[in-house]
Amino acid sequence: MKVICPNCGKGSEYSLARNFEGKVECHCCRALMWVVVAKGELQETRIYGEPEARKPIDISISEHDIEETWKRWEVGSWVDLEDFKRLVKTTYPQLVERARNKKTICYGELEVYNELQARFGEGVRTVIGQVVGACGEGELRNGRPPISAIVVAKDTGCPGQGFYGLSELSGTPQDIAYDTWEGKGIKGEAIPIEIQIKRVKFWQQKLKEVHAFWAGKENEH
Image 1 (tube, rainbow, N blue to C red):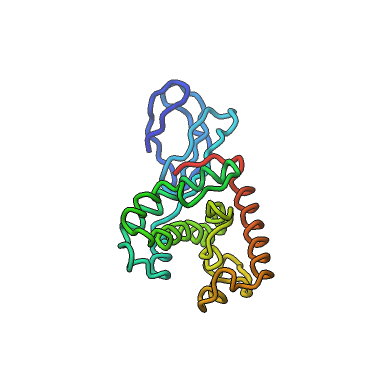
Image 2: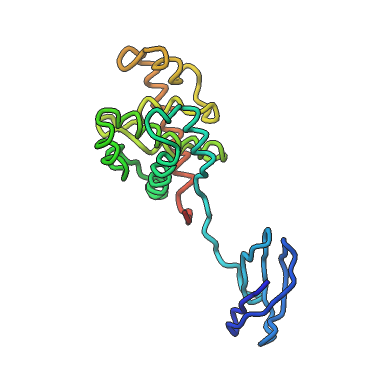
Protein backbone atom coordinates (compact mmCIF):
# COMPACT_ATOMS: atom_id res chain seq x y z
CA MET A 1 0.00 0.00 0.00
CA LYS A 2 1.34 3.43 -0.97
CA VAL A 3 1.40 6.02 1.81
CA ILE A 4 2.16 9.69 1.17
CA CYS A 5 4.27 11.28 3.88
CA PRO A 6 2.75 14.52 5.26
CA ASN A 7 6.27 15.74 6.05
CA CYS A 8 8.12 15.38 2.72
CA GLY A 9 5.20 14.71 0.38
CA LYS A 10 6.76 11.58 -1.10
CA GLY A 11 5.12 8.18 -1.29
CA SER A 12 6.44 4.88 0.05
CA GLU A 13 5.13 1.34 -0.30
CA TYR A 14 4.27 -0.68 2.83
CA SER A 15 2.90 -4.14 3.52
CA LEU A 16 0.04 -3.38 5.93
CA ALA A 17 -2.76 -5.54 7.26
CA ARG A 18 -6.34 -4.95 6.06
CA ASN A 19 -7.03 -3.43 9.46
CA PHE A 20 -4.00 -1.58 10.78
CA GLU A 21 -3.38 1.30 13.16
CA GLY A 22 0.15 2.20 14.14
CA LYS A 23 3.51 3.87 13.41
CA VAL A 24 5.47 3.54 10.17
CA GLU A 25 8.64 5.33 9.09
CA CYS A 26 8.83 7.33 5.86
CA HIS A 27 11.39 5.69 3.56
CA CYS A 28 12.49 9.09 2.30
CA CYS A 29 12.75 11.56 5.20
CA ARG A 30 12.54 9.02 8.05
CA ALA A 31 9.68 10.87 9.73
CA LEU A 32 7.40 8.73 11.86
CA MET A 33 3.83 8.59 10.61
CA TRP A 34 0.65 7.37 12.28
CA VAL A 35 -1.30 5.34 9.74
CA VAL A 36 -4.84 3.94 9.98
CA VAL A 37 -6.14 1.32 7.54
CA ALA A 38 -9.67 -0.15 7.67
CA LYS A 39 -10.91 -2.95 5.43
CA GLY A 40 -7.93 -2.50 3.14
CA GLU A 41 -8.55 1.25 2.64
CA LEU A 42 -6.22 3.97 3.89
CA GLN A 43 -8.20 6.11 6.35
CA GLU A 44 -5.63 8.45 7.90
CA THR A 45 -2.00 9.51 7.65
CA ARG A 46 -0.46 12.08 9.98
CA ILE A 47 2.90 12.82 11.57
CA TYR A 48 3.18 10.75 14.73
CA GLY A 49 2.49 12.88 17.79
CA GLU A 50 0.22 15.35 16.02
CA PRO A 51 -3.40 15.40 17.22
CA GLU A 52 -5.89 13.30 15.29
CA ALA A 53 -7.67 15.28 12.63
CA ARG A 54 -11.34 15.98 13.21
CA LYS A 55 -13.17 13.85 10.66
CA PRO A 56 -16.55 14.63 9.19
CA ILE A 57 -19.26 12.09 9.94
CA ASP A 58 -20.34 10.23 6.83
CA ILE A 59 -24.06 9.64 7.19
CA SER A 60 -26.19 8.95 4.16
CA ILE A 61 -29.27 7.05 3.04
CA SER A 62 -28.65 3.74 1.31
CA GLU A 63 -30.28 2.46 -1.86
CA HIS A 64 -31.35 -0.64 0.06
CA ASP A 65 -33.29 1.46 2.57
CA ILE A 66 -34.94 3.42 -0.23
CA GLU A 67 -35.93 0.22 -2.00
CA GLU A 68 -37.45 -1.21 1.19
CA THR A 69 -39.75 1.81 1.48
CA TRP A 70 -40.54 1.69 -2.24
CA LYS A 71 -41.70 -1.91 -1.86
CA ARG A 72 -43.57 -1.47 1.42
CA TRP A 73 -45.57 1.52 0.24
CA GLU A 74 -46.04 0.18 -3.31
CA VAL A 75 -44.60 3.39 -4.72
CA GLY A 76 -44.19 1.66 -8.07
CA SER A 77 -47.74 2.68 -8.96
CA TRP A 78 -46.40 6.26 -9.13
CA VAL A 79 -42.69 6.14 -9.97
CA ASP A 80 -40.23 3.37 -10.81
CA LEU A 81 -37.49 2.39 -8.39
CA GLU A 82 -34.59 4.22 -10.04
CA ASP A 83 -36.59 7.42 -10.28
CA PHE A 84 -37.62 7.10 -6.65
CA LYS A 85 -33.99 6.64 -5.60
CA ARG A 86 -33.10 9.85 -7.44
CA LEU A 87 -35.89 11.79 -5.77
CA VAL A 88 -34.98 10.57 -2.28
CA LYS A 89 -31.24 11.13 -2.75
CA THR A 90 -31.96 14.68 -3.90
CA THR A 91 -34.22 15.39 -0.93
CA TYR A 92 -32.21 13.79 1.88
CA PRO A 93 -29.24 16.23 1.87
CA GLN A 94 -31.66 19.16 1.83
CA LEU A 95 -33.33 17.81 4.96
CA VAL A 96 -29.98 17.23 6.64
CA GLU A 97 -28.92 20.82 6.02
CA ARG A 98 -32.13 22.17 7.58
CA ALA A 99 -31.87 19.75 10.50
CA ARG A 100 -28.31 20.84 11.22
CA ASN A 101 -29.57 24.41 11.54
CA LYS A 102 -32.46 23.34 13.78
CA LYS A 103 -35.05 24.43 11.24
CA THR A 104 -38.10 22.95 9.57
CA ILE A 105 -38.95 23.02 5.86
CA CYS A 106 -42.27 23.16 4.01
CA TYR A 107 -43.15 20.54 1.44
CA GLY A 108 -43.28 23.21 -1.26
CA GLU A 109 -39.70 24.26 -0.49
CA LEU A 110 -38.29 20.85 -1.33
CA GLU A 111 -36.17 20.83 -4.47
CA VAL A 112 -38.20 18.07 -6.12
CA TYR A 113 -41.63 19.54 -5.31
CA ASN A 114 -42.16 21.59 -8.49
CA GLU A 115 -41.05 18.69 -10.66
CA LEU A 116 -43.49 16.32 -8.97
CA GLN A 117 -46.31 18.85 -9.11
CA ALA A 118 -45.81 19.24 -12.86
CA ARG A 119 -45.81 15.47 -13.30
CA PHE A 120 -48.62 14.45 -10.96
CA GLY A 121 -50.78 17.51 -10.30
CA GLU A 122 -52.80 16.95 -7.10
CA GLY A 123 -51.00 13.63 -6.74
CA VAL A 124 -47.92 15.57 -5.71
CA ARG A 125 -49.08 15.29 -2.09
CA THR A 126 -48.90 11.53 -2.23
CA VAL A 127 -45.58 11.29 -4.01
CA ILE A 128 -43.80 14.00 -2.00
CA GLY A 129 -45.04 12.29 1.15
CA GLN A 130 -43.52 9.01 -0.03
CA VAL A 131 -40.20 10.68 -0.79
CA VAL A 132 -40.06 12.40 2.59
CA GLY A 133 -41.24 9.23 4.31
CA ALA A 134 -38.46 7.23 2.71
CA CYS A 135 -35.94 9.64 4.20
CA GLY A 136 -37.54 9.16 7.63
CA GLU A 137 -37.68 5.38 7.40
CA GLY A 138 -34.09 5.20 6.19
CA GLU A 139 -33.01 7.01 9.34
CA LEU A 140 -35.09 4.81 11.60
CA ARG A 141 -33.62 1.63 10.12
CA ASN A 142 -30.18 2.93 11.07
CA GLY A 143 -31.05 3.89 14.62
CA ARG A 144 -31.40 7.62 13.97
CA PRO A 145 -34.46 9.84 14.63
CA PRO A 146 -36.85 10.31 11.67
CA ILE A 147 -35.59 13.33 9.75
CA SER A 148 -39.00 13.56 8.06
CA ALA A 149 -40.18 15.27 11.27
CA ILE A 150 -38.74 18.57 10.02
CA VAL A 151 -41.00 18.63 6.93
CA VAL A 152 -44.23 20.49 7.60
CA ALA A 153 -47.28 21.86 5.81
CA LYS A 154 -47.17 25.61 5.24
CA ASP A 155 -50.71 26.18 6.53
CA THR A 156 -50.45 24.14 9.74
CA GLY A 157 -46.76 24.10 10.61
CA CYS A 158 -47.13 20.36 11.30
CA PRO A 159 -46.23 17.25 9.29
CA GLY A 160 -48.73 15.51 7.05
CA GLN A 161 -50.77 12.52 8.16
CA GLY A 162 -48.24 10.17 6.59
CA PHE A 163 -45.75 11.04 9.33
CA TYR A 164 -47.78 8.91 11.73
CA GLY A 165 -47.62 5.99 9.34
CA LEU A 166 -43.88 5.43 9.42
CA SER A 167 -42.60 1.94 10.10
CA GLU A 168 -42.97 0.36 13.52
CA LEU A 169 -39.38 1.48 14.19
CA SER A 170 -40.66 5.01 14.82
CA GLY A 171 -42.37 3.95 18.03
CA THR A 172 -45.61 5.69 17.02
CA PRO A 173 -48.26 4.81 19.63
CA GLN A 174 -51.03 2.71 18.11
CA ASP A 175 -53.76 5.11 19.22
CA ILE A 176 -52.33 7.92 17.06
CA ALA A 177 -51.02 5.80 14.18
CA TYR A 178 -52.11 6.39 10.58
CA ASP A 179 -53.48 2.85 10.30
CA THR A 180 -55.79 3.47 13.25
CA TRP A 181 -57.43 6.52 11.66
CA GLU A 182 -56.71 7.52 8.06
CA GLY A 183 -56.10 3.88 7.20
CA LYS A 184 -59.73 3.25 8.14
CA GLY A 185 -61.09 6.27 6.30
CA ILE A 186 -61.25 8.62 9.33
CA LYS A 187 -59.63 11.92 8.40
CA GLY A 188 -59.30 15.57 9.34
CA GLU A 189 -61.72 16.91 11.93
CA ALA A 190 -63.30 13.47 12.27
CA ILE A 191 -60.25 12.45 14.29
CA PRO A 192 -60.87 13.18 18.02
CA ILE A 193 -59.22 16.34 19.29
CA GLU A 194 -57.39 14.44 22.03
CA ILE A 195 -55.76 12.27 19.36
CA GLN A 196 -54.77 15.33 17.37
CA ILE A 197 -53.16 16.84 20.48
CA LYS A 198 -51.27 13.60 21.20
CA ARG A 199 -50.04 13.57 17.62
CA VAL A 200 -48.66 17.09 17.92
CA LYS A 201 -46.84 16.24 21.15
CA PHE A 202 -45.39 13.07 19.59
CA TRP A 203 -44.21 15.01 16.54
CA GLN A 204 -42.68 17.78 18.67
CA GLN A 205 -40.69 15.19 20.59
CA LYS A 206 -39.37 13.62 17.38
CA LEU A 207 -38.52 17.07 16.01
CA LYS A 208 -36.44 17.79 19.12
CA GLU A 209 -34.66 14.45 18.70
CA VAL A 210 -33.83 15.20 15.07
CA HIS A 211 -32.51 18.68 15.82
CA ALA A 212 -30.49 17.43 18.78
CA PHE A 213 -28.94 14.65 16.70
CA TRP A 214 -27.87 16.84 13.80
CA ALA A 215 -26.93 20.05 15.59
CA GLY A 216 -23.22 20.77 15.26
CA LYS A 217 -22.42 17.71 13.16
CA GLU A 218 -20.21 17.88 10.10
CA ASN A 219 -21.37 15.58 7.33
CA GLU A 220 -20.44 14.34 3.91
CA HIS A 221 -23.00 13.05 1.38
